[in-house]
Length: 176
Image (cartoon, rainbow, N blue to C red):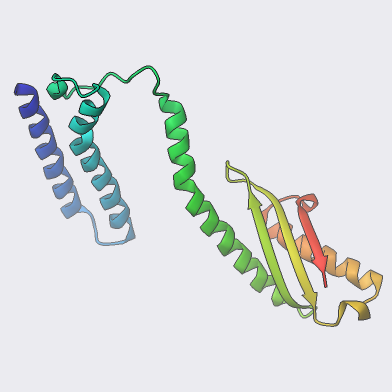
């Protein structure tokens, strides 16, 4: 029973500390992030006995509340990697969509381009692997000379490579 009391004291202490910390923070955008982190810490403290029960195999000594012994089949590095990937996927999707919209607006601001559509492909580590750009010139593509088409392609590749800081070899441009 003393382990339960110890856990309860720890939980109450952390909740009180986070409440005091919350009162001391100035009201700005960083406070929201700090509240998120404090909430995660509180959740971990409250989940500790449940994790002890789960990892003990539902044995009767589940009130041990210490660090539960993990079964040998649990690979924490692999599990954390999967959690990190799952958490980063929506963020990376949002970043690529925002970058694509900004680049489309930048390309359309050129007098030679009537419309542009971008697709950005990212690897799991967050680096950009390829960018596909479809450009519709102001004049019909059939009316442009081969030299004008090449200059337009170079302009698009230059803008995209400078904006995303990637090599021009990773940028594929389709005009028409």
